[in-house]
Length: 122
Image (cartoon, rainbow, N blue to C red):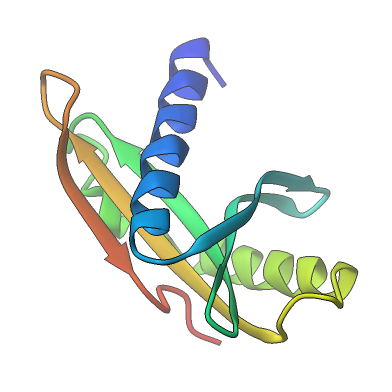
């Protein structure tokens, strides 16, 4: 991963965390790296443990940010969520995987932010 991509990823996670907290979520963990992959954010929303995939785009060359979770990525996220939940029995057992898709303007401001609840079914 290039330094630029890493900085953009960190910025996206900061933007998403701030947004989620404004919506009543409590972010409890971030950047969880496991053998199976990475979880961007973990939050509590009521009695639900929510795993959030953050996608940030600076252009639409790679498609819209909201289109960034493939079926394979979704399956990987489900496995990661289940493994994290098993490692943290003190947290709620109701699980959900959301997507926060952020598109920046040319000037670097948030042009669009979409929060898709239950972005990954199963």
